[in-house]
Amino acid sequence: MKRALTRAALTVGILVVVLLAAAWTTHRAWAPGMIVAAPYPEGIPAQAPRGVDHEVDVVRTGAHVRAWVFDPTGQPRGTVLMLHGIHDGKLRLVAGARHHAARGYRTVVVDSRGHGESSGAFLTYGVEESRDLVAMVDELARRKLLAGPLAVIGSSYGAATALQHAALDARVDKVVALAPFASLRQVVGAYIEWLLGPPARLIPAPVVDDLVDDCARQAGFDPDRACPRCAAPQIRAAVLLIHGRDDERIPWQHSVEIHGALTSRKKLVLVDGVNHADVGRGTRVGQEIRQWLDAR
Image 1 (cartoon, rainbow, N blue to C red):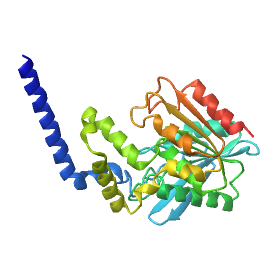
Image 2: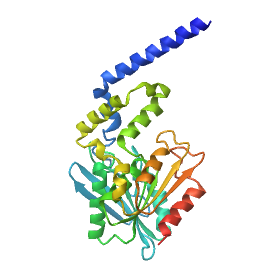
Image 3: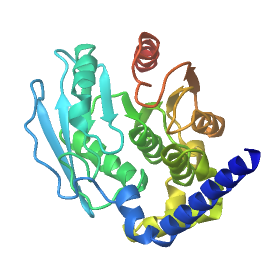
Image 4: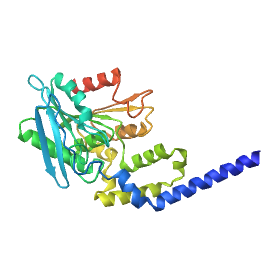
């Protein structure tokens, strides 16, 4: 019996190695579609929902980025930019935008390049998206729609973009980053493990790095610049990091690394029993975000 179990385990191990080897030898065919190809490269028109007071768009190299603006009823207490996660869109942010507008903030929900209404062939994990946001803030200021202080709230992919934006743009006063990744290289490894489970640990780190390099080369960006942890020392804004301890996609240690690299005012909130998708939910998280936005 013991010998049979050993044989079975060996067979499974060999099969896993063969499958991983096959996946690697064909990665140039499938990896870009999973990692850097935009879900909607041409953008998809959408009807603005109730409460949208302005539609703003900016054109940059390789992308046309669109946003909706929700005005408060009175004089704005400030401006809040809201950023969605990967393969999502600003429609998902409408309820939150209405909430912040009702509390007195002019709120701007943005479709990142290659998502929703915004065009763009490739995702660059914050490298170009952060510059898109600088252009968006420029356009808001030009149209006299920018009321300080300026806060940027993002989740996951959007959280990483928010941090990289704050490193570039001194106009950003506050950041709320929910479940950000520390670097593109790290998050690709984490997602591979999430998808494949324990066998993913058999993949050497240099192999994952080569995969990232190939995808970034096709998308035309430097993967080492897709690194919120690396950008953190340049951030002067106050940063609130929120991460679930049960995050199965981006481990909470990513936020710990970013927190350690920040030199500005900062706070790290680790929430027990919360996974990646639910990190923005719950009374405690809502209170933390409101207090961070309202603090002067």
